[in-house]
Amino acid sequence: MSTHRSSPTIRAAALLALACGLVVEAQTPTGWGDPAQAFVFRAAPETAVELAGRDFSRTQINVRGAVAVVELRCRLTLVNRSDRVLRSVTLAIQSAPGLPGGKATVMAPSLAVAKDEEFAVDVNLRLVRPLPAPGAPLAEMTVDGVLYADLSFRGPDASAARRRMTLFELEARRDRQRLAAVLAEQGGEALRKEALAALDRQASQPALEARLAGGDGRAISPAVESSLRPVELASLEVDETPLELLEGAARVAGARAMSPTLEVRNVSGKAIRDFEVGWVVNDRAGRRYAAGAIPSTGGPLQAGDRGRVDSQRLFEFRTAAAEPFEIGGMSGYVRRVEFVDGSFWIPSRKALDAAALLDVEPPSSEEARLATIYRRQGLQGLINELGRF
Image (cartoon, rainbow, N blue to C red):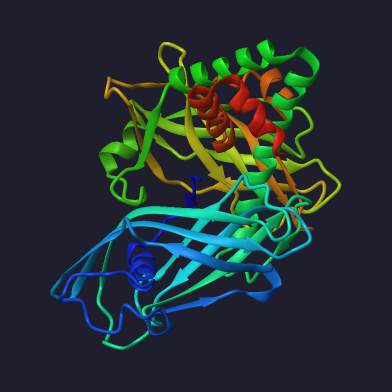
């Protein structure tokens, strides 16, 4: 089972491996082989997820002085005690208080786990962390949140997992339902064509790397500042969007660009907490590249109100092949909206297609996962996987 990690801190995650009863090198402090002393698992009763087993047989730990280097190959077996079908789970790992960056999260998505069924979470990382004092607990691991098939959430949510898990599931559900509809309405061969098209799209989509100039994108030399020219950001209309892009502009020079300034309007009947605008960059030949996302700034946007996004950071772009690149134009579209009431909006597949964005919008993790299942297991394997949901 694949897992998705949100910027895992190697120090905190390494604790988990050390804490779960491994056989380690002789120079490891004594007592670490006892999970009761070294590892604390807190089940978070509201999540109704329990630890059923753990396997660290493939994990390697090397202690070098006061540092542990861990090749973490860990499998945790969990069980769902809820009456509802579980769709995803996020695990939070925390080291001793005061350790800088001593936190990590691991998310396991695209699950279909009924009551009393077990499921596995695999973690594959290389980790490094300082050693704690002998005899002290090494880490605490909790179930930070679970998301069910009805999109309800339970858990402490200390890592803001709910938002991440819900958005992932909405995109995954959109892509699964589209493929299931193709199978039901047009048959297996049509589904095969869709899977092949997804693989081709993932392989052929042009890649563009964006990085902040000067580290944080804020330190801009006078020479660079004077070379930047204004470019309008065209709005790509997406059907049924709750947010309208009124206008946008950026300043560019060669392969550099300031993050766009946007003016938007809430055209829905609900207050918007935050949103994300997809940023598309064209080269001089007209090829389009996904340049990333522009997050909202400021507070909630009430129904009918206007807002402005202006982060003013300088980015440098480079193609995957490191070919010379020069910005020819820019455009943007609304990718995600979160409302104050906790609900979300994402564009439908039909809306993305109508806006000619399928060749630009990065494939969702679920589309990539399903396409990989087809490549490895064939058409019947993909059909079986869709049937799980």
